[in-house]
Length: 176
Image 1 (cartoon, helix red, strand yellow):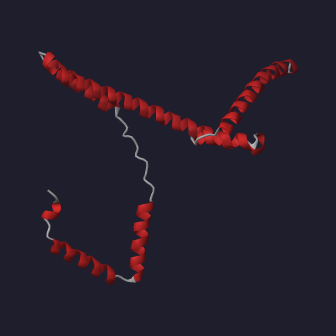
Image 2 (cartoon, rainbow, N blue to C red; image 1 turned 45 degrees about the horizontal axis):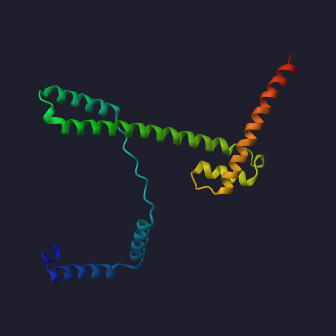
Image 3 (cartoon, one colour; image 1 turned 60 degrees about the vertical axis):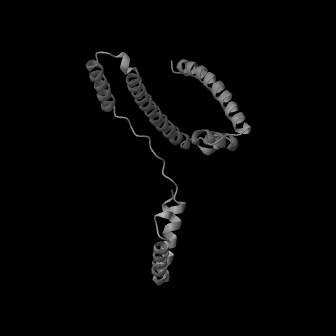
């Protein structure tokens, strides 16, 4: 059954006419304002939904509640389905908490690395290497060329760090 059968068509036509009359009676400025507002609402980017942070006290209280429920049971064979559901729920909550903590630390580390990368002088790296690093830091899809420049930079870094160990030794000799 559809809801249209419950509504009378004449009633909906009257409502539509009232809405049209009210809209036509509005001044031009208010009509433009309403149009802008509706356009803003349509074009507004959806805010990222944050995953709910699982409270450790909540997990602990759930475990205690499960323990209490389990202690009250004398015959567990009939409650296997309920026990399985409890354990799955607790496991999911623990994994979700671990995932949230991991995501938070990776975001903090990434933002710290971005700030440090901005401190490097622009002439220190060539443009293509800098673009490849920016893509990697911001999570943008990299091309084969970008991957090549990152591998090349990795080899140069390895070589320079190896040379730096020799310079450390020479520095100690000179400072004697």
